[in-house]
Length: 218
Image (tube, rainbow, N blue to C red):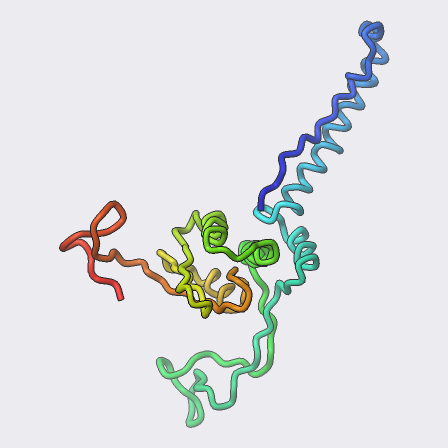
């Protein structure tokens, strides 16, 4: 998402004709109005770009606006635990530590963090405007997750699925987003898979490890 640089500044003193340069009262009025514009006009639009328009920095209000525009829910409904699922507890009908997880009797709603919301909405935005080509997706993933590590897409060239390769272990927040929302960009009608390759692998060259420094990856 590229955002054009805007200049919201207004120079009201340009309206002052040269013959009135020495008119102190008139100049004082314009300077006061200039100060008001800088505080209320320029600051308003700069804050609006930061808090609403720019998905990289938008706050909760701005993200809720984008969610309506893009048609993406920012809360996840969690279904109740199935009756036959082992649930942590004590007694004859429950599992103890190491044999069961925490269960949920009724459905509940899980909210996302601000960073998760930004990730979801940026993925959805790109999904709508992208052509789905591999170079385009790789460039976008670099912008989206480049600060965490390298993510790139491989195409098997058989129109079945594309493979997203993560060279780092995604944190729980990112993993939850990727597991819950089907938003990873790819060509229409093509599936998607994710793998994590965060161990050094055997090879030669600048980006690989040689003997005794890496293993053969599967």
